[in-house]
Length: 121
Image (cartoon, rainbow, N blue to C red; front, side, top):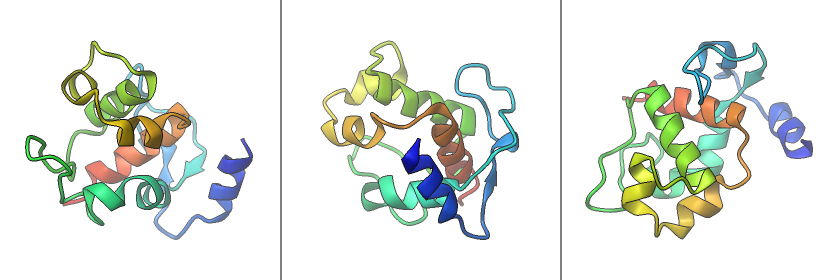
């Protein structure tokens, strides 16, 4: 919770309105709290996936930029929850990096990150 408040204080002008994000479980809009998906993406994802989600850490993967926010949120959640029934985790379950990058992310942060990535081109 402390990390969430600290991150909220670092928000830039490019905030993602979580009300426009999708709920990971239901694909419906979430609460109207503003979470900056860009800040979270830059801290947790950009090292491997690139500044604009244009890179792929593995040859078999496609870049994340522009992916559907709901589908991407489900994939991130599958890594976090170690859910072998879902796409990316089932294919890349040996990705310790993804497990470590997602283990502490609450659903609201996952939604914000997925929404931010889906808007990248």
